[in-house]
Amino acid sequence: MSPDTGLPRFGGGRSGQSVPRVAFVTQWFAPEPTTTPVWIARSLSEQDLRVEVLTGVPNYPTGNVHDGYSSWRRTREVHQGVPVRRVPLYPSHDQSAVRRVANYASYAASAATLGASVLRSADVAVIYSTPATAAAAGIYARLRWGLPYVLMVMDVWPDSVFATGFLTGGAKRRIAEPALTWYTEQTYRWASHITATSPGMRDALVSRGVPEDKVSVVYSWTDEKVMRPSEPDRQLRASLGLSDEFVLMYGGNHGAAQNLDVAVRAMGELRDLPIHLVLVGDGIEKVGLRSLASDLGLRSVHFLDPVEPERMPAIMAAADMQLVALADEELFRFTLPSKVQSILACAQPIVTCAPGDAARVVHEAGAGFSSPAGDPHQLAKTIRQAAEVPRGELRSMGRAGYAYYRSHLSEEINARALAGIVRASSGRRRRGRGTGGTP
Image (cartoon, rainbow, N blue to C red; front, side, top):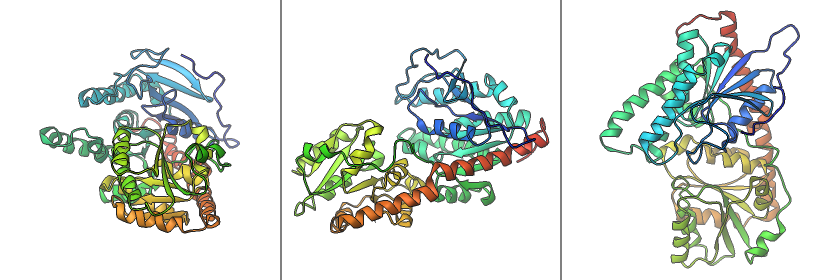
């Protein structure tokens, strides 16, 4: 185990006032490659809140326990100045629905029981609700000790469960869907406040019966120390045999959710123009995408291996525009993929081929073009339109997107908003510590 060393950095609070104590409950945390929970914990600790993380033994994404840890032993450590308490769980992250359920359920039970000292001593809990089973610890603490909790809904259950390919049909789904729906309704019911990652998600929660005044939009921000405007990587175009051609780039996971075959098929309708598509990254669909491009005889589609996050701003800057793609599924209408924030923070213009909030944000920012999800013909027309825009105007779109990011999506704006929600919720416990109550 090689946790960070050093004393926790706690804000001193306003003169004469104690610092609210926050139990930040998240199944996944560093050294697992899930950066958002780390940013949230660090940002809250910098907002005059005393944060302690309650998380599981690290085993994501392989399902194997990381070196130096034991799946059945509690540990304490400090990460980036924030104290971390780890509780046991059943390690798994494979394609078995049974083992995945065991992984989620074991963390939920362990956090509620073996993490009780963290919850009992807090003024408020913040639940990073992906998976949604993490909220079980919040419900338990609310009913047992009257601990208020703020529920950060990162993806909507049960929709996202079935979208992953688990329990997609048959008797198992008929049993699981009403049970998961009831459970998620309870997580909303007992929460003091709920945050959604986009306006569309907020509307979806309200449509499911959550009171409007109980839900606030708090956008996820990107790593602003890494994702920022950059000079272009001068070697990229030369390595691909390109010079002044129009380059559309996609960087990220090549999975079913991204529906990147639409972009490859769109390139088949653009053979008459010097337009190239560069796909950076990896995923289960990459082999199929290579085969599709080969079958269509497309030399204008290029595949690059994943690169370190620190290199991505310069790689993106070597292209003319960035592509954001999602399948035309109901779930994605209220999903704002994190790459939108990353691209805007790098001052890059965007073409969206996605439903809902992704297209809405780009439109509001004046940062690019949008095309209907799942339609290669319309995407080809949109790319053709974008390629006709002078590069100076494209750079202006990128700057407009950057300004929008700073004023709407940045850490400064959203960490402050989240801290205000947490502080307001903590006041309920501090005024009547130890009492239960109804939501």
